[in-house]
Image (cartoon, rainbow, N blue to C red; front, side, top):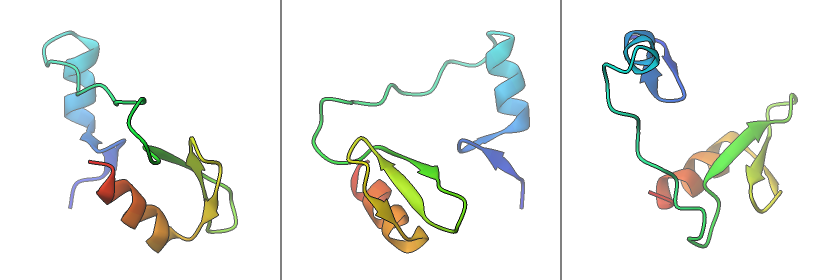
Length: 67
């Protein structure tokens, strides 16, 4: 399995930096619901923009429904 950073392989990030790969889709921030998460450090995540602190499983569920 290839390690990914923000859902992208390292090779894709390098190509984006060199303007050889189109940038990923923009996030629709005006749509209701959470569209991101930041790790808190104790195994939980603070959801963006709601600020709710949730488990990894809940984070995944919310981000899946945001697509």
